[in-house]
Length: 234
Length: 219
Ligand SMILES: Nc1ncnc2c1ncn2[C@@H]1O[C@H](COP(=O)(O)OP(=O)(O)OP(=O)(O)O)[C@@H](O)[C@H]1O
Ligand SMILES: [Mg+2]
Image (tube, rainbow over all chains, first blue to last red; front, side):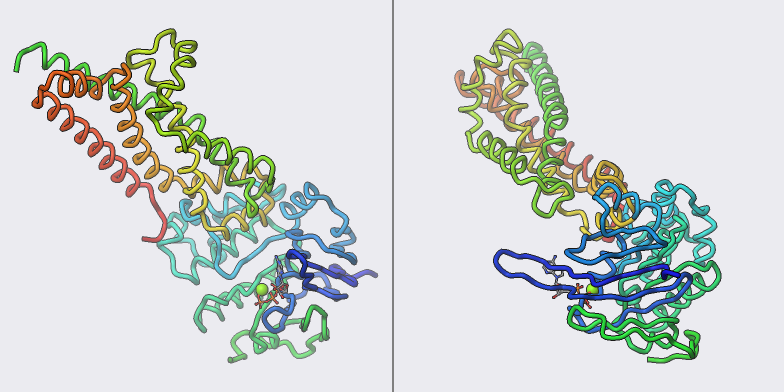
């Protein structure tokens, strides 16, 4: 049986004037449904490029990418917009919330796009922000803003949750709490979650660890001994 | 001061407000779409299009580089076609709009450029259409800055409207020129100037107060 996510022989070349940069060079991996997957690698290795291609934000130069048996790599830009709308949720390092909308309105903006959304207020309650729904992002801490951003991605009820360094701007404890939220969501709802991180310690809580180096997937490790966030330190 | 003079000044204020507000409104109706086009067709924009961006920018720059007094005279034939006359407040609105719309377009463009690109990326990532990104994210996020821009635009258009007094435009500018300049009535001139300053101040203050109320961004 084919894996839930299939990333096969992907090459991504950026042309800036005369110079060609191979951000990805024959990169490949698989992820199973419901897994908590971590992508690690040095700066510039190609992690964000992988996530953007997987999430339909960017196109590839060569290779093929499939999610749940549907090929993404051949989609045109209209199909990609639909794919992003119905199948993926993104979480960014700097939250990227609309500053002039409340937490609830930010989440509702996403649910209005989805065919089969969750209730925006319920999701905010699940991420622990029941009392803060009417607040604007500027009135929330970094960790709280990231929770809103996670709620915004989850409320669309996507097949795949993609997080690019979601704890990169947070302190140790807040970062841990956010990771726990992502991990719990994955385990409770069976959603497939992919998290990019610079921090190797985080891999201990992942089901699958993909190591990226110089535009290639150096290795994919299945973690037999998954630890909870509380058990790991960095 | 005699009654006739007070009546004259009152008329002048009314005409100036009328010209300024109507011109600003029409200039925004034209300038906002142009500003949005400039922004989205930019190299880093969501509907990158070099040709449209270049031509829109070129036309705007062309009009903006013509000094207003020259534009005023050059547009007299056009004004006559549209309004039927070249003197008075209505006639002044035509050159005011032509001069202000490109200016407004640039102001709008620069306000939109202040919007955090990450927020636009997030909207794109959740599958918003381009139109939704523009109407639900970019413009609402730029609203405080757009309003500050509008107060600046109003003051600038007010200044232009006073200049139009030289070629038969109405309002306070015409009074200042006809009485203060041609008839050496310094007191009338000073009063009209005081009114102009007052009007600018009022718009500026009211605009900023309003912006502070609606702006939810970090301060
Ligand atoms: N739009 C672009 N144009 C040109 N080169 C790019 C572009 N985006 C990425 N690259 C290049 O592709 C390579 C991989 O970039 P990528 O952003 O995927 O790295 P990363 O692993 O996410 O790094 P970091 O941990 O610093 O975020 C880098 O060398 C980068 O300079
Ligand atoms: Mg990155």
